[in-house]
Image (cartoon, rainbow, N blue to C red; front, side):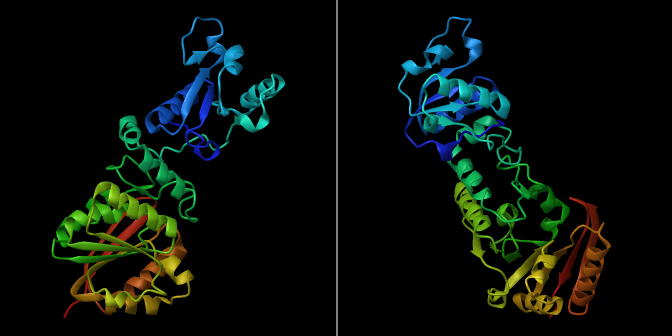
Length: 326
């Protein structure tokens, strides 16, 4: 599936004529058919004109015979779509009934490769698309976190990260976990099965909405998500057995929290014998490397170093695990 039907431009329950039967048109037909979002009055394409066809397929010169509220031009190429639009206007079709959008094309991160998976759960994936359009600069129109369980690619696969961080070695079912800067929460929902409960915090409301709707969709009951940041949320009251700070510290420092404050906040929020998972940003940047090195030095003055591993994941990175001793 590469193309998204223009749901925002078409009213639910309306009668729609589809113009175009290429890959875009086929994607639109499947989405409308499985979602029951609107009614297909007819479907036309110039390739039909030389052949005998049966409803819903009709010849292009017959489209005006059908009752439609919109003609959706199912053609991704603007130049070709514009030619069709002009032709239909010349034939007397009202401009406000013609729909075409430059936002047809979907990135692979948006929908799973398995068509059956999202067509059978269309409403959930459509809500994801709506919220993704509202997320902040971290998304860039894609998901940062990939989730194989959902079929979503993303930039960083959460199942792979759980293995990479060796979480099965450190986490257990008795633990309460806190994730600072949880993004869309896919990582936390993967970790939830390994712990008693997990709470994700993120400043972006759309990220939190995605996390909550995905928790409902996957029926994960021990994951909680809070909108905000640690400048206005007292995480010390949460008293976690483990805290994730995964490539978020630079963004937190930009919000006005000094590194020393951040270290104290995390230290005070951890229970005795609690764990901190501290991940760097890409170490290809010398500036980021210096910031991370300094932050590690500050934590090592307060906590025991348990593990430090380098790896390649969206750039050279490092994960360091610390334990708060009694």
